[in-house]
Image 1 (cartoon, rainbow over the protein chains, first blue to last red):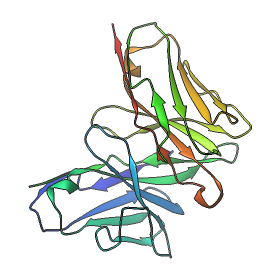
Image 2: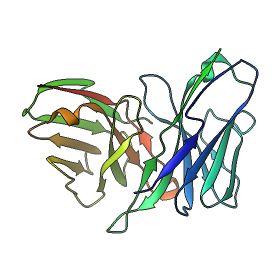
Image 3: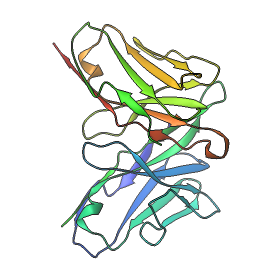
Length: 117
Length: 112
């Protein structure tokens, strides 16, 4: 598995402002992912962040709104820019880890609960 | 495209069994099952790979039918700790390897 921490755990922000969420993992990983989970809903992939390359965004998500940094193999940030109430959600990072037998899966951080007023 | 889970919700008494299904419209490389309790992160349960079936821990197991693009999660002799929302995450492989698309979730409630 992996030990993953996120900061902040929760925040309340005013519309039009930006918030940067940090994700720290206890060991080096190649692939990190950022998800959004709206209340009572499923997880939606925002982007994939590999160290040393630009993040790859999923349909419906753009870099200007959700800029991502990946400065090293244990850390990543996601910024939610120019926030509106529709951005209120839980944001989770995950990391890809290998399993016995050669396959890979994802382990999730605890999430950041964001409320935009 | 998001896989479809059924049922949307299940209510059990301790000791009863349940099956949760996950169906995809795309060919799959693997299916990953997670359980999420309220206010917590999703916890990985097990992975089902194309060409194989893997049993998990406790009394939870799963199957993967590649031809039908379906996976099922089996919970036997349920315990109170099994309560939570179960998600399947599908990986189509190829250029999308490693990316998971999650179903809408199945809420499982186990009563004493």
